[in-house]
Amino acid sequence: MLSRERVIETINHRTPDRTPVYGWVSANLTDKIEPAFGSVAQFEDRYEFDYAHLFGGPPTYDTKTLEHLNARLGRLPEPIEMLDVPMTDPDDPGAYQGIIEGIRHHKESRGRFVYMQTPGFFEAMNGVFGIENHLAYLLLYPQQIHELYSRQAIWNAAFAMNCIDLGVDMIHISDDWGAQNSLMFSPQIWWEMLYPYHKHVVDAVKSRGCYVSLHSDGNIMSVLDGVEKLGFDVVHPFQESAGMDYSAYLSRYRHKFTIMGGLDVQTTIGFGNFDALASEIRRVLGLFKEGGLLYCTTHYVQSHCSIEELTFAYDLIYDTIRK
Image 1: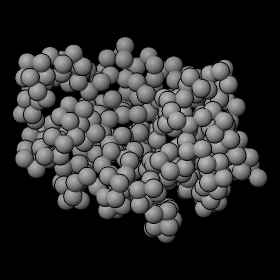
Image 2: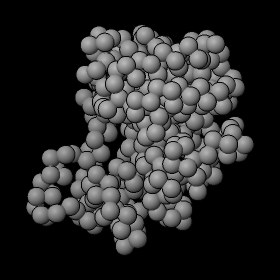
Image 3: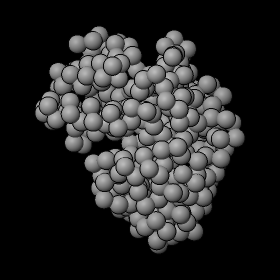
């Protein structure tokens, strides 16, 4: 079975020949990987990664425009002030060159499944407002937040359509909602303020026959029924260390969506405890031996992880999934 086929089998709730594997390793560990392997690409080839996470494309708002606005105001903007700020052009062809190159390298040359990072709503606007302000604005200015999210949903869908046209296999919407033990806001706020706009984007992606995935750190157990209703095919990271329950997934959601994750950067990899690391790798891979898992790090492996530990982990993963 080829890599892309293996991932598709898993997303479609079938049992592949082995668990597909990937890892978010480049952001913090490139300087350690390159001396040992020559490049991150050679590390990915050595461990026969089955899929790849692509970044790039136009930003939702022009960075210099926001800087000038902040300087003029002397503070971060409020929602009513952002309504006058234009979004960038999602159809700017010059913004997609990196995505094209990523598809060429991973999908066309390596046969991998490729998924594309796209913005959510809460996470994206945290960069504009600051997270604490944004949480307050959900309650103080709901109508203005609805207006901002509504126009961003149109932008996000256009961006996604362009990525699909280029050959991306899955649109990956990054929208952190979870704290360590619960959502950062109430489930009611999620259903009222976030669900409608995610539905707009997910429906648009699904209309093209493309897969769609969600990234949210933390504990989002209280809205998993909503995530299922939206139609997400994949959920990352389904963070066990934040109280997300694998047994609940296996009993209730196993045939609704697939988990991407399993190698926890908060508790498992990067702490120098090789015995615990090995035990966790074997445990999680064993739980999902019949499918349901795209094995991956739960987030970027942090810089305190040594190259020896990273290599130990992926040597073990490589051998375990091939037994």
